[in-house]
Length: 224
Image (cartoon, rainbow, N blue to C red):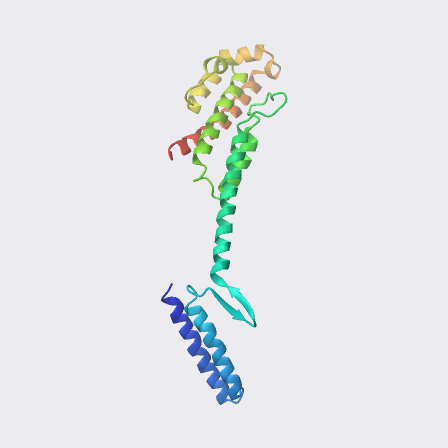
């Protein structure tokens, strides 16, 4: 860059001289106008040539500070990026909290939709790298919460996975959750009016949501 700028500045100056001479020769410029043109382009050429070193220059009495403006802008951008990352970190901590009021009876933990919306924004702004540990923690917490939701649909899951130290694979959960006896017991409790077909559909939807969280957790665990 330090070599390119002086070369570009010299080319611009020489081109202005050639153009000015042609206009002078054609009578389009007077001698004083030719001199003014050359001086102006000489200043511009010097500014370009030494742009990495110039701190300020004056235009019609107004001082323009190049290095300071660039430095301030870069510092402000850096501070804004840091603040954005910390805001995402704070929101991720909130994503683990259960909402107030009565818990829903749907196949998806109520915290999960808001988490996916937040995660979309984190990816959009390229903050995944700085938040790897936080995303690992939240995805594990929500995946365990989703197991609890599946347990509300399947008696066997509710019994065998009441507390988990590790995240079971989605296929492992699916086999257990769709056990005929477990589904029948859920029907006897009046879930979905005892309609075992609807119960199975809810279980499948719940497992699908768990699978997404499980894969997200596996992805960030591999990066730690």
